[in-house]
Length: 266
Length: 303
Ligand SMILES: Cc1cc2nc3c(=O)[nH]c(=O)nc-3n(C[C@H](O)[C@H](O)[C@H](O)COP(=O)(O)OP(=O)(O)OC[C@H]3O[C@@H](n4cnc5c(N)ncnc54)[C@H](O)[C@@H]3O)c2cc1C
Ligand SMILES: Cc1cc2nc3c(=O)[nH]c(=O)nc-3n(C[C@H](O)[C@H](O)[C@H](O)COP(=O)(O)O)c2cc1C
Ligand code: FES
Image (cartoon, rainbow over all chains, first blue to last red):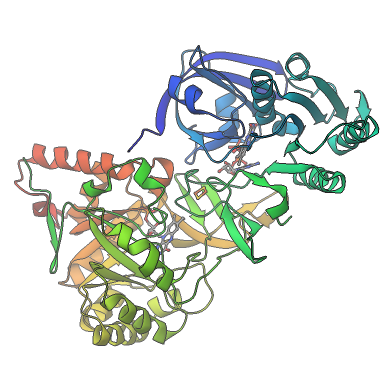
């Protein structure tokens, strides 16, 4: 009944694809075996509280998983400097991920660090033979990340950048609209299509609106400041609608981070 | 083998380590990760007469060696707790303490009455929450109000009554004496210290509530000093908390005068912290040659 949650994980690989991001591959057969797309891990650094990161991918055979880190402050700076062989204490896998069952086409829409957990969704789609379409928004081509990996893994990709130097000029919402329009024009059956969004709030809100207009289901992965990551301190709340329409404070860490877009109060 | 049991008035605990209010959820989550029968006790999340949805997020800010929270007593209300949470908590095999917080003076008595027919082991009067307007901490910073609240609860309740004190006062021993004189069976301290963290770029406080309660190792020396002060001022048991992360920290709190300790913020960094603390405290005690952990209480050797 009682199961372990705290693992000491060794860094297996450190990659720095560009100036802004570091990708760490960590060893934990347990986390790799249990993790589902949309779940996250809570990582110790030299700071007091742990830092949450979406799980970017898993290699169940090797018993490893990866996280992508954007350096924002002291904690992420420390983590970005870890080297192969270093060990870190990690809680995971945590939270409710995306509910992907019953869908035959999944469109992921990510912005910034939001593309990391969505890569895991695409990895899952490929394994399960689900049609995966990846829409990613970046600031610029220079700051783009995982574009090759998404291209190799998903059935179709669309990359947007604010700077206008990628396929679509503007944010991920514009690219998503084009993907939806395309599906509708080609009379595709969208009854079992799901949009999974993760990124800046405004981007997710746009994705949710576009999904609703098109009659497509949508799930969003929210971000809140956390302490425990396991549901016991109630600091990470977001506002959601209950079935009876009343508003409640749900915990982003255990009730989420993924919520049905319909229940989120933006 | 060291005797780890401690006696808080009429209540005997398996060991001196209690999970602090507000840092253990409603236990449904934490029971997946540890055997809760190993704890000395669990103090429930702060309960109120009516359900409360709490303050808006962000509700947390980090600081060196600690954190601030402004949860604002989010809880499903005491009646829901008694019906749906308490029966399950009572199966864990450790002491269960109901932490109650009132907005109005009368609410403490009303809640104590509702708890009277339950098997809850003790009531902890939260006179110290810094994150709600009116009541609560306002009561706890006024010796006269402490007397009134404690004696009104004593009239309707036969449960052991613990009074949780706020450090946001000039003299915490004056508050402890007021609680003792009004009939409290124990005092617990400290609740969080009121603080403020500002993002210098936006010049906005990190927390939506602006201020919040500071906890964690950053407050430990203040807590140890206050526990020692209160231990010298009253003869009822003192339950000490504030920044305990290890068994050695628990020993320090007991040496200052605590008969039992509570562990809060440590659970948020490591969900199984209490179990480690109990094990470390036990082996530390064994190494001192003491037969029982209760022998440590108040053994400070002052200069
Ligand atoms: C569920 C979830 C998944 C995440 N996934 C990723 C990911 O895959 N890759 C990635 O680079 N980042 C991710 N983040 C954001 C990441 O956790 C923060 O950037 C990081 O905590 C910042 O720490 P710091 O010490 O560098 O910054 P500081 O600003 O110094 O941190 C101070 C405090 O604020 C908190 N904090 C600051 N920014 C955020 C934020 N945006 N979200 C939550 N807490 C914050 C920190 O955890 C810490 O407690 C995720 C956040 C959440 C909640
Ligand atoms: C997130 C959080 C929520 C808390 N909620 C309550 C509460 O509902 N009632 C209460 O009496 N104390 C509450 N506290 C205070 C703790 O019980 C404890 O008194 C304080 O945090 C100091 O101990 P620590 O440093 O071990 O955390 C809360 C503390 C934290 C960090
Ligand atoms: S971070 Fe503690 S409940 Fe979510």
